[in-house]
Length: 619
Image (cartoon, rainbow, N blue to C red; front, side):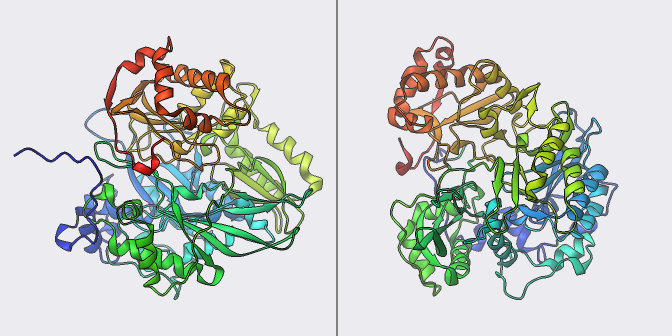
């Protein structure tokens, strides 16, 4: 019998229990996501975990990893421990001091360097953690009020929000992120038992989402965007720094007016069905969320509950590569999903046609906080890695700023959706002194030169050597690539490059101008058609049934990008972004140009069968 070759996604909706995959069975048999983790994390004679414990540990924010730079049969096991930070914080001086001190104790790389890692979901990760350090690390951080609950796994993940919205006079997205995150958080009792956490640090709220015994089908991501007012002109603008449509649910505040300068937010535009992860060898796709409806503030949390419940009931529990919500939306459609949510008794209006969530604001530099007149400073951190290195003692810098300025009622710290940090509540009189302090640690320069616009807009996921899923380097490759492009004269490009080590696409590269996705050791697939405002979805370079530039050798990546920059600069219309240009000329036009390029042309000779792309996403 010939094995069936899958050409399009075929999610098994409302999967019958007899077809549940192995992870679903692990969850069902786990006694409330407990399993054998309490015993296994205390067994230091064994460095790794059993298969079931490894799968369950993700819902408690822990990934079993090993040092990918080491070869041999014996793996150098370690852990990535991810703390959920709703809306990015904020951190007081005392809270941040605990994070920094725990990194010194438990998160040192083989060179003896401690670091913290800010992520694109505003989490904070500890890498290189050995098994005996897992419990004391989690117990210590619990004293700050933060935990690893929902850090990974098949549940609601860290809820994102614009960091500047915490100081908005019309919509505090940070507050909503905390509220929503608490409502959808897993019960605290198993976590307390497994990791020996002081129960006074955590509580299980009475009003909360009731997870099924096997939790959700897959990860579930939510983000709140923002609205800001220009202090000089009084004009309001939407801000999509969170890239809300890349999430299962994206929520945008709708600004309404009593008069042109006095706004209010009482309704929300909701999108559903986004998600960037794909799976090699399977017909999967990345997608932006589709307009779903407009919810009042009163009905918003009820609506989120119903949307999540519909996915829990209907989503695929047999095929994990089709288990995310985007496949339910793709298969059943938005009208069907709307009806299911209404069956839960939730009222909402039709989505607003043409609603624009706004650009991806980076929040770099100085900003005024509307609610109190104090200042915030967005501090670029390349790839979110807070470490003391040759291009800045960034870890020491952040700790020093918090110690100096972060006393009672003083400066607080918020992580951003672009892996940076924001110092908030700064007195205007301290502005110049704080800038000087940052520069004294080497911040603001790389290799003796100021950060270029291209560098400030680009970034990468962690990749090798610490990510078990990664095929190649990303965080370690991105600075090198931008160095090359800066030297070639492209540093002033106000476009973005996103790099991930595998097709899970944690940095969301396909929503950037140019996306690079690891496809093997020192090999990168290119994705085009994304845009700087995250309003369009990028895809693999496909013309007809052929897929081009799936595995660009690392030494050639800069040359490919340079060729794309050159043709864009020579042929774009006034005010046309590179993503808009790519969509105007289409994949066929890009392919024809690259085939004729003297440097890139030879790379275009190797092709592969085109991957699946939904009809509504072709360009």
